[in-house]
Length: 96
Image 1: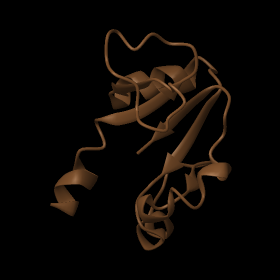
Image 2: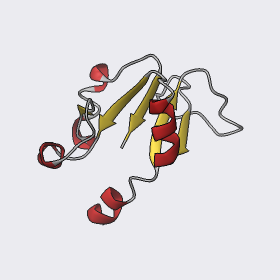
Image 3: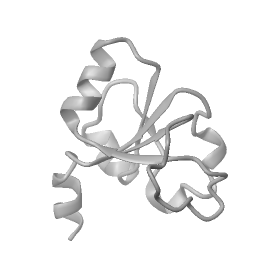
């Protein structure tokens, strides 16, 4: 299951301040931060356009050390609650 998740990097969570939820319910405790699923091509386009994008690698630290996107923060999914303050609050945040 984990390999399947890692292989599906095509689906990326993006937290974008100010976007409409499109009728979706807010995330509990999320202060109405909208979440949108986007693909790798869309992320690449945002990066090439110079959009303020913060990349957060949520895989294990060991996986991050083996290979990661240059400039990405390492915040493993099992510690995301504890390290939530490390996640940027402005611009686009991409979790992969």
